[in-house]
Amino acid sequence: MAKTKRSRSINLLFLGNSFTQRNNLPLLLAELAAARSLTVKHELISVGGASLRTHWNAGRAAKEIATGGYDYVVLQEQSTLPVKNANRMAENVRLLDEAIKRAGSKTVLYMTWARQHAPETQQAIADAYNTIGEELGAIVVPVGLAWQKFLAKHDKPVLYDRDQSHPTLAGSYLAACVFLAALLKANPLGIESGPAGLDGEDRMALQRAAWQQFGLPK
Image 1: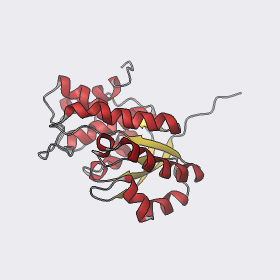
Image 2: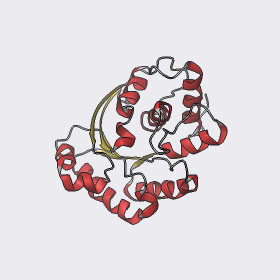
Image 3: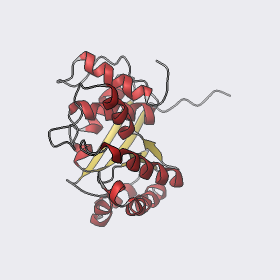
């Protein structure tokens, strides 16, 4: 019997705030995927500063999830909530995960990064995402851990915007590369096309950091 080929096209719904919206992370991922002959269709519901509970209470996200047709729904929690109240975050994720599963989709958790002035909080962020991810059988995309490792070795390109919180274009590109590897199982190394504002050397460093996050060979 012939092996089933992995789908070359996926449909994603992103729920989050400016951490996802800034620099258009979904589009960066779609462009990377296209370079590997993969198609990523995407929709984004974003509210500035929003928690997942905000999205749930507003109702729009639940209605969109219920329409079906999404292979994956990507959840990005408000950036400091995993540190301040991991239990509350877990409650928020459970609410949405139930709706996602009911619609026949799969939950993906977008693990974000620590604030620049508080790098010690990255472990709490990672623990919060990994714990609820394991409980629900969700896919955790460890962007924050990739950021942490990159920052330990590189001064450039700069990942943080001036507010020491939001991503620069380089930070969002690193996130997109991690999504490509974690969700699509595709290697970002060597993709030559990229957004204006990142030179080839910077792109290569970010691609390598994303791929090595999974201990994968070149």
